[in-house]
Length: 185
Image (cartoon, rainbow, N blue to C red; front, top):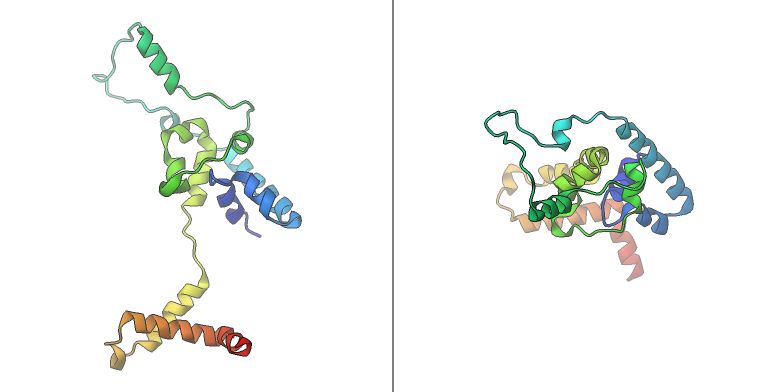
């Protein structure tokens, strides 16, 4: 029921809302996208400090008198300027864009780029907050705690691979996976 998983998918530039629309059942999709939209509405109202959007320095010695730009500098400046989205809603504009694969660096690194932070300032805050949540499950914690009981003082010399195999077998036995495996054989 938490919107964070769906928001993480939406904020991944590879997936956006299209992934949920295409792959999730309709009854899940409508509720999930509505919750992500509500989450976005909280971020949309955030006041962003100007220093996070437009970098500048307080040092007076760094300030230079503005000079008239030559043709090359005007072209370079126009290439650096970021086109504002068509609508006033960053979330809608982001989702209307084509998908983009951030590659090995991942979605979080993509949102940390200055280009994305300037183009979608509030949405980038939301993305950084949500995508930086570490994914975790109770099951790995339980298995890790179970390994503590396996490796006693008497068994301190067991190889890590052996411990891993033993813990997997113990987990599979408790969850019934081994029983179904042997029934099928």
